[in-house]
Length: 287
Image 1 (cartoon, rainbow, N blue to C red):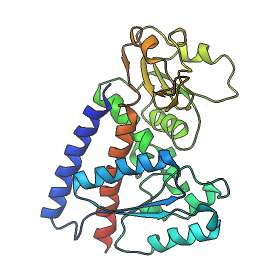
Image 2 (cartoon, rainbow, N blue to C red):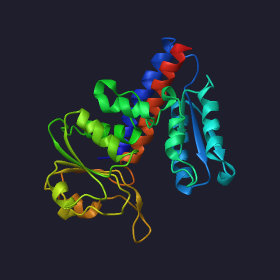
Image 3 (cartoon, rainbow, N blue to C red):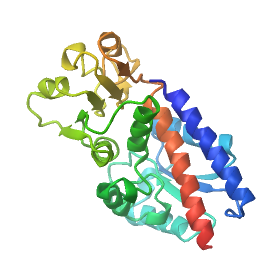
C-alpha cells in the first residue's frame, strides 16, 4: 500500500476544495498553520520540513515558531506562546511538534491549544468527539485518519473485520483503534503488558502496529492473507530506517502491507493539511 499514491489523491481533493472555497467566497485569505517547536530535535526538524513542503505545495501559509533554547522556557512560557497564537485571528491551525523536552508536561501543553485550531486532533475536545462516532469526528488525529484513508483507498473492508492494534499511545495506537471501532471493526488493543501478543495478531484480518520498535512483528505473527499497516518508525540494528514490521519477511505472506518509509507517514501530513483547510473554512466563516 503506497502512501505516496494515497497522499496525492488527498492533495488533489484538498486543492479542489480550496479552489471552490475561494470561488464561493468562503475564504478571505489562505489557510494558515503555526508550528510550535521547542528545542532542536533532529527528527522533529525532518517532520516539520515535510509539513512546510505540504503547505507550499497547496499554497497555504505557515509560520514556524521555533524556540531553540528549550531549557530557557518553562511550561508557563510555552503555554503563553500557544495562547498568543490562539488569540491571533490570522491563524487557523496550531500544532506543537512532539516530542517535547522532558521538563515540559505534554498533557498541559496540548490542553492549551484552542480546540477550534487543534488540527493535530490531540486536545481532549478532539479526542472526545472522536470517541463518539464517525459523525462526530471533526479534527481526527492525523495518523489515525491516515490509516483509515489508506485502508479505504485500497478497498480493505473495515466493518466486521477483526483488527489488532499493537500500541496504545495517544498519537497513534489509541486513536487508530477508536476510528476503526467507529467503522464497526472488532478491535483488540495491545500494549506493553499484553500477554500472548503473537496469538492476538495471528487472529486478526487487519494488523496495525504503532510502537516504534524495529521489526518486532515477524511472519510468524500474522495470518496468511492478512492486511498489515505499519505505523512505527525507528532504526534497526544496521542504523537503517525501519518500521515495526519485518517487511521482507512478512511481504510474501500477507495480502497487503504498507512500507516504512513511504507508507502512513505521508498520509499523516496530508491529513494534517485536510484538517487545516477544514479549520480555515470554519474559522473564517465565523470571522
